[in-house]
Image (cartoon, rainbow, N blue to C red; front, top):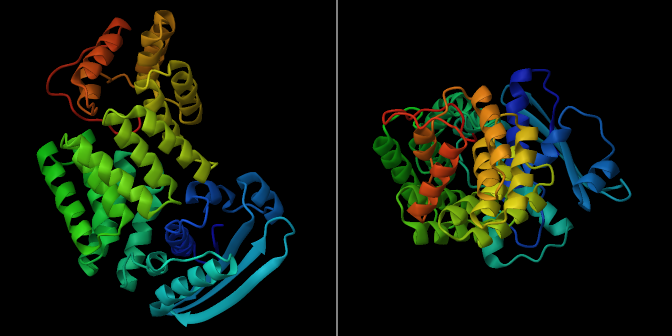
Length: 399
């Protein structure tokens, strides 16, 4: 659950959120646990909820809740593990430490949780429990501040706000694989959507950060996820799929790793396998973010399961108005519903009046180029404007 901020300072919200997210991320590396993703558990932030109701709604047997109070260099962290069926506490602890001890506290919490839940740890999984994002307190503070923006809708504005915080964090701890990996992810998004740098410049930055992350930690799921996406943009489809698969192996409980793997597999010409990863992601995060539906619909559509694809993209658009409409136009057109395709195209232009087929196509990655040509033809037949050769800018990564 999101940890409560008892500091009386709204600025410390990111600190409490970052602590909870880091514990989730560490636990997601263990194959013996099914850990609900932050996207789902954090919907209860700021709400009074019965633990038994939460457990039932998320389909879990145990709930970890806690609170954080920070005063200067001192922190007090209280946590308790609760039986989701009875609501009774299983384990509780309070840590009164200095801020420099926060990483040791996180390690202790995750190790105790694994023990209390009787997870059988191999030597490799025991090593993965150790906290690895950064060992620098100031860098960690910048990291979680950036994370507070990144975890909002993935847009040019939000990613732009996260970028300087993560750059500062990496400057403080250049040997952090996780920080290198996440910075690489931002530059991958930039390379794909043309937000800040020229495409080749952004792609070079993304590749450099991904390579550095892999060099620093060959067991980092974040590094492999970023590398898979960069390889995808480079047209190295087999390697992209291999790296995406490795990311999921290293973090079997990570919904994000599974959802990104779905996107990589679908774009690499393996949509049926992509469906498996997307369905896995939605199980790991029952209250998943809207873009998971985009990845799921993408996989369904490229696999030719148009009815399922249409349902996924309609759900995506219902949750995030204006999103998923391009794929919905294509799915309607390719499944023999030209009237619905044209109606959706009209709605798309009302939401995104600057949309052009050429701009959209510049953000797409297909193992089979003829597939993209067929999709562009479907969009043209639905009345969408082709656009000019120079257009390459959008404010959202999920249109």
